Length: 268
Image 1 (cartoon, helix red, strand yellow):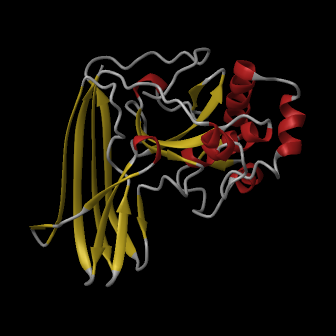
Image 2: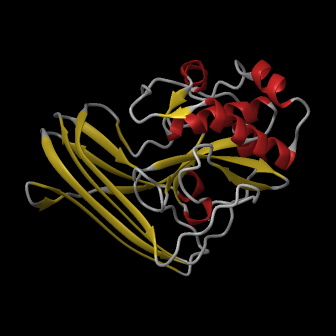
Protein backbone atom coordinates (compact mmCIF):
# COMPACT_ATOMS: atom_id res chain seq x y z
CA UNK A 1 0.00 0.00 0.00
CA UNK A 2 1.17 3.52 -0.81
CA UNK A 3 0.05 6.20 1.65
CA UNK A 4 0.56 9.93 1.10
CA UNK A 5 0.24 12.38 3.98
CA UNK A 6 0.87 16.08 4.48
CA UNK A 7 0.38 18.81 7.06
CA UNK A 8 0.65 22.60 6.93
CA UNK A 9 0.74 24.68 10.10
CA UNK A 10 0.99 28.43 10.53
CA UNK A 11 1.38 29.77 14.05
CA UNK A 12 2.54 32.91 15.81
CA UNK A 13 4.70 32.69 18.92
CA UNK A 14 5.34 35.05 21.78
CA UNK A 15 8.90 35.86 22.80
CA UNK A 16 10.88 33.16 24.59
CA UNK A 17 8.70 30.29 23.39
CA UNK A 18 9.81 26.70 22.95
CA UNK A 19 7.74 24.58 20.56
CA UNK A 20 7.43 20.81 20.13
CA UNK A 21 5.61 19.35 17.11
CA UNK A 22 4.54 15.76 16.50
CA UNK A 23 3.51 15.69 12.84
CA UNK A 24 6.02 13.30 11.22
CA UNK A 25 5.28 9.65 10.50
CA UNK A 26 6.72 7.40 13.22
CA UNK A 27 9.85 5.46 12.37
CA UNK A 28 9.30 1.76 11.65
CA UNK A 29 11.91 -0.51 10.06
CA UNK A 30 9.27 -2.58 8.32
CA UNK A 31 8.24 -0.05 5.67
CA UNK A 32 9.47 -0.73 2.14
CA UNK A 33 10.34 2.95 1.81
CA UNK A 34 9.59 6.33 3.38
CA UNK A 35 10.15 9.59 1.49
CA UNK A 36 9.51 12.76 3.46
CA UNK A 37 10.23 16.47 3.53
CA UNK A 38 9.93 19.03 6.33
CA UNK A 39 10.21 22.80 5.90
CA UNK A 40 10.00 25.25 8.83
CA UNK A 41 10.29 28.93 7.87
CA UNK A 42 9.76 32.40 9.31
CA UNK A 43 9.88 35.56 7.21
CA UNK A 44 11.06 33.43 4.29
CA UNK A 45 14.05 32.01 6.17
CA UNK A 46 14.56 28.35 7.04
CA UNK A 47 14.68 27.78 10.79
CA UNK A 48 16.94 25.31 12.60
CA UNK A 49 15.25 22.57 14.62
CA UNK A 50 16.12 19.45 16.58
CA UNK A 51 14.52 16.05 16.04
CA UNK A 52 13.83 14.23 19.31
CA UNK A 53 12.95 10.54 19.59
CA UNK A 54 9.87 9.50 21.55
CA UNK A 55 8.20 6.20 22.45
CA UNK A 56 6.93 3.88 19.70
CA UNK A 57 8.97 5.43 16.90
CA UNK A 58 7.48 8.87 17.43
CA UNK A 59 9.49 11.98 16.59
CA UNK A 60 9.12 15.49 17.96
CA UNK A 61 10.57 18.49 16.16
CA UNK A 62 11.72 21.12 18.62
CA UNK A 63 12.36 24.84 18.11
CA UNK A 64 13.17 27.82 20.33
CA UNK A 65 12.13 31.43 19.64
CA UNK A 66 13.62 34.35 21.53
CA UNK A 67 11.53 36.90 19.59
CA UNK A 68 7.86 36.84 18.51
CA UNK A 69 7.69 34.94 15.22
CA UNK A 70 5.17 33.85 12.62
CA UNK A 71 6.11 30.34 11.54
CA UNK A 72 5.05 28.20 8.58
CA UNK A 73 5.54 24.44 8.78
CA UNK A 74 5.10 22.15 5.78
CA UNK A 75 5.49 18.38 6.06
CA UNK A 76 4.79 15.63 3.55
CA UNK A 77 5.57 11.95 3.33
CA UNK A 78 4.98 8.97 1.06
CA UNK A 79 5.09 5.56 2.73
CA UNK A 80 5.20 2.26 0.84
CA UNK A 81 4.35 -1.03 2.51
CA UNK A 82 3.44 -1.82 6.08
CA UNK A 83 5.38 -1.41 9.29
CA UNK A 84 6.27 -4.13 11.78
CA UNK A 85 3.56 -4.45 14.47
CA UNK A 86 4.60 -3.12 17.86
CA UNK A 87 5.69 -5.31 20.75
CA UNK A 88 5.89 -4.14 24.37
CA UNK A 89 8.04 -4.58 27.44
CA UNK A 90 6.50 -5.55 30.80
CA UNK A 91 7.10 -1.97 32.02
CA UNK A 92 5.14 -0.52 29.10
CA UNK A 93 2.22 -2.82 29.84
CA UNK A 94 2.25 -1.67 33.47
CA UNK A 95 2.31 2.00 32.36
CA UNK A 96 -0.62 1.54 30.01
CA UNK A 97 -2.89 -0.18 32.51
CA UNK A 98 -2.63 2.67 35.05
CA UNK A 99 -5.05 5.62 35.21
CA UNK A 100 -3.76 8.79 33.52
CA UNK A 101 -4.67 12.46 33.18
CA UNK A 102 -7.30 12.04 30.46
CA UNK A 103 -8.18 8.36 30.94
CA UNK A 104 -9.42 8.08 34.53
CA UNK A 105 -9.90 4.33 34.62
CA UNK A 106 -10.07 4.27 38.42
CA UNK A 107 -13.17 6.50 38.37
CA UNK A 108 -14.79 4.52 35.57
CA UNK A 109 -14.12 1.06 37.02
CA UNK A 110 -17.73 0.57 38.26
CA UNK A 111 -19.07 1.65 34.86
CA UNK A 112 -16.77 -0.72 33.00
CA UNK A 113 -17.68 -3.72 35.12
CA UNK A 114 -21.38 -2.87 35.00
CA UNK A 115 -21.40 -2.61 31.21
CA UNK A 116 -18.94 -5.35 30.24
CA UNK A 117 -19.15 -7.86 33.09
CA UNK A 118 -16.82 -10.81 32.55
CA UNK A 119 -16.02 -10.09 28.88
CA UNK A 120 -12.38 -10.53 27.94
CA UNK A 121 -10.12 -10.44 24.89
CA UNK A 122 -11.65 -9.80 21.48
CA UNK A 123 -15.20 -9.80 22.83
CA UNK A 124 -14.30 -7.03 25.27
CA UNK A 125 -12.63 -4.91 22.57
CA UNK A 126 -15.62 -5.20 20.28
CA UNK A 127 -18.05 -4.47 23.11
CA UNK A 128 -16.17 -1.36 24.25
CA UNK A 129 -15.90 -0.04 20.70
CA UNK A 130 -19.63 -0.56 20.06
CA UNK A 131 -20.68 0.90 23.41
CA UNK A 132 -18.59 4.08 23.12
CA UNK A 133 -19.77 4.58 19.54
CA UNK A 134 -23.38 4.24 20.68
CA UNK A 135 -23.12 6.41 23.78
CA UNK A 136 -21.30 9.41 22.27
CA UNK A 137 -22.06 11.81 19.44
CA UNK A 138 -19.22 13.13 17.31
CA UNK A 139 -19.53 16.92 17.43
CA UNK A 140 -16.63 19.06 16.16
CA UNK A 141 -15.45 21.61 18.71
CA UNK A 142 -17.68 20.23 21.45
CA UNK A 143 -14.98 19.42 24.03
CA UNK A 144 -12.38 21.40 25.93
CA UNK A 145 -8.69 20.61 26.01
CA UNK A 146 -9.05 19.81 29.72
CA UNK A 147 -11.85 17.22 29.31
CA UNK A 148 -11.03 13.64 30.22
CA UNK A 149 -12.98 10.43 29.83
CA UNK A 150 -15.31 11.17 32.76
CA UNK A 151 -16.33 14.58 31.37
CA UNK A 152 -16.80 13.05 27.93
CA UNK A 153 -19.15 10.40 29.31
CA UNK A 154 -21.14 13.01 31.22
CA UNK A 155 -21.48 15.26 28.16
CA UNK A 156 -22.18 12.32 25.80
CA UNK A 157 -20.35 13.99 22.93
CA UNK A 158 -16.84 14.82 21.79
CA UNK A 159 -14.22 14.52 19.08
CA UNK A 160 -11.89 11.65 18.20
CA UNK A 161 -9.57 12.06 21.19
CA UNK A 162 -12.57 12.04 23.55
CA UNK A 163 -13.90 8.79 22.03
CA UNK A 164 -10.42 7.28 22.36
CA UNK A 165 -9.93 8.43 25.96
CA UNK A 166 -13.21 6.88 27.03
CA UNK A 167 -12.39 3.56 25.34
CA UNK A 168 -8.92 3.55 26.92
CA UNK A 169 -10.30 4.23 30.40
CA UNK A 170 -12.92 1.48 30.14
CA UNK A 171 -10.34 -1.04 28.96
CA UNK A 172 -7.78 -0.15 31.63
CA UNK A 173 -10.52 -0.53 34.24
CA UNK A 174 -10.71 -4.17 33.11
CA UNK A 175 -6.89 -4.52 33.39
CA UNK A 176 -6.31 -4.35 29.63
CA UNK A 177 -3.28 -2.19 28.69
CA UNK A 178 -4.49 0.60 26.42
CA UNK A 179 -2.93 3.74 24.97
CA UNK A 180 -3.72 6.61 22.63
CA UNK A 181 -2.20 6.84 19.15
CA UNK A 182 -2.11 9.95 16.98
CA UNK A 183 -2.42 8.96 13.33
CA UNK A 184 -2.84 10.09 9.76
CA UNK A 185 -6.11 8.53 8.63
CA UNK A 186 -6.84 8.28 4.89
CA UNK A 187 -10.59 8.45 4.34
CA UNK A 188 -11.23 10.60 7.41
CA UNK A 189 -13.90 13.28 6.99
CA UNK A 190 -13.54 16.01 8.02
CA UNK A 191 -9.79 15.58 7.44
CA UNK A 192 -7.56 16.33 10.43
CA UNK A 193 -5.05 14.63 12.66
CA UNK A 194 -6.88 11.64 14.14
CA UNK A 195 -6.73 9.90 17.52
CA UNK A 196 -7.49 6.23 18.14
CA UNK A 197 -7.06 3.78 21.00
CA UNK A 198 -4.79 0.75 20.95
CA UNK A 199 -5.37 -2.23 23.25
CA UNK A 200 -3.02 -5.09 24.09
CA UNK A 201 -4.64 -8.54 24.01
CA UNK A 202 -3.27 -11.98 23.21
CA UNK A 203 0.26 -10.60 22.88
CA UNK A 204 -0.42 -7.87 20.32
CA UNK A 205 -1.66 -4.27 20.01
CA UNK A 206 -4.90 -3.68 18.11
CA UNK A 207 -6.63 -0.47 16.99
CA UNK A 208 -9.95 0.59 18.44
CA UNK A 209 -11.57 3.55 16.69
CA UNK A 210 -14.97 4.16 18.29
CA UNK A 211 -15.69 7.02 15.87
CA UNK A 212 -15.67 4.66 12.87
CA UNK A 213 -14.69 7.61 10.66
CA UNK A 214 -11.82 5.97 8.73
CA UNK A 215 -10.62 2.47 7.80
CA UNK A 216 -8.07 1.27 10.34
CA UNK A 217 -5.85 -0.61 7.88
CA UNK A 218 -4.78 2.59 6.10
CA UNK A 219 -3.84 4.56 9.26
CA UNK A 220 -0.24 5.69 9.84
CA UNK A 221 1.19 6.20 13.32
CA UNK A 222 2.57 9.60 14.27
CA UNK A 223 3.13 8.95 17.96
CA UNK A 224 1.56 7.18 20.95
CA UNK A 225 1.38 7.49 24.71
CA UNK A 226 -0.75 7.34 27.82
CA UNK A 227 -3.27 9.84 26.47
CA UNK A 228 -3.35 13.09 24.50
CA UNK A 229 -0.98 14.78 26.95
CA UNK A 230 1.75 12.63 25.34
CA UNK A 231 0.63 12.97 21.73
CA UNK A 232 -0.34 16.60 21.01
CA UNK A 233 0.68 17.65 17.49
CA UNK A 234 1.71 21.11 18.72
CA UNK A 235 2.67 22.19 22.22
CA UNK A 236 4.77 24.77 24.02
CA UNK A 237 7.40 24.27 26.69
CA UNK A 238 7.35 27.79 28.10
CA UNK A 239 5.97 30.81 26.28
CA UNK A 240 2.83 30.68 24.14
CA UNK A 241 1.60 30.54 20.57
CA UNK A 242 -1.53 31.06 18.52
CA UNK A 243 -2.36 28.55 15.78
CA UNK A 244 -3.56 30.41 12.68
CA UNK A 245 -3.75 27.65 10.04
CA UNK A 246 -3.94 23.87 10.12
CA UNK A 247 -4.35 21.74 7.00
CA UNK A 248 -3.97 17.95 6.97
CA UNK A 249 -4.26 15.50 4.10
CA UNK A 250 -4.00 11.71 3.98
CA UNK A 251 -4.74 9.37 1.10
CA UNK A 252 -3.89 6.00 -0.39
CA UNK A 253 -2.88 5.28 -3.97
CA UNK A 254 -5.92 3.36 -5.16
CA UNK A 255 -9.04 2.26 -3.32
CA UNK A 256 -9.35 2.63 0.43
CA UNK A 257 -9.45 -0.65 2.35
CA UNK A 258 -12.92 -1.93 3.19
CA UNK A 259 -13.49 -1.63 6.93
CA UNK A 260 -14.63 -4.84 8.67
CA UNK A 261 -15.39 -4.10 12.33
CA UNK A 262 -15.12 -7.81 13.20
CA UNK A 263 -11.43 -7.92 12.25
CA UNK A 264 -8.56 -7.20 14.61
CA UNK A 265 -6.25 -4.64 12.96
CA UNK A 266 -2.82 -3.50 14.14
CA UNK A 267 -1.46 -0.03 13.47
CA UNK A 268 1.33 -0.46 10.92
